[in-house]
Length: 311
Image (cartoon, rainbow, N blue to C red):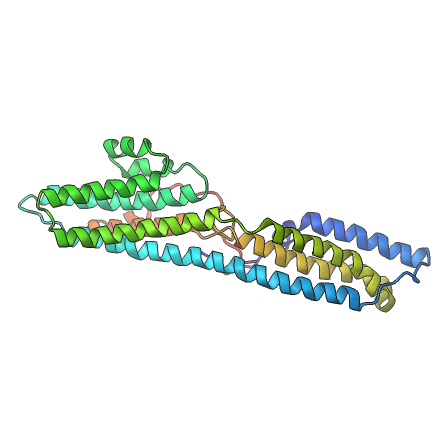
């Protein structure tokens, strides 16, 4: 989740440390040359960097909007995963008939719910290019784990196991064909959500657009001191550093937001969402379990999860 916390200055500067060093060195050298070598006659009309800055502002605004749309779409998709996970387990719990064997029915429902929790963790790891099989072992039976391990796409394999169990339940008369269709539609929505996440993950932002913005930014930084010297004199250096840093920070914000599954502080917190889903599903299939026990489930979280800064 995104937490409202004070962002350390070190964190902010660290995002543009190389650009900050370059601009600082350039602005200081430029200021020294103009003040001590008396070359103030070399100037550029302030309108030139102003025009370039306006163009960059428009380009950055477009990129920031597109990047935020990608981030927000990822969050909407995972919100749908939360809803469909609850719906899927609710359907299994309410549709599956005990048929005089409540223990067998309870075991089926619990196994189905834990497999869905495993799917959420596995999908999060898969999108972050981590081992998608690592977090699922504790949720699956040995047979299910062996079947999933044979597949390269672990989340898709878990959905196939869902479908296999639903077909078996239909053949055994535990659910009817109408209920099977309803459950299958929910599984299909989960598959659609998985595909949408992969689309965001695998669709890169046009590199030429990024290159042009970066080139324009450095051109703006190179021209800016020439336009400010006539008006600001010795305070030209800190002013150039401040203005350039703002532009570079906006660019970095857009770069980070455009990839919401890279395990960065600004990412969609997929592991935290998966943990919330797991706790909810455990409540649904084990209403008698103590709430404190549910909250103390041992889940290994990626080290980036915990505090999320918005930049």
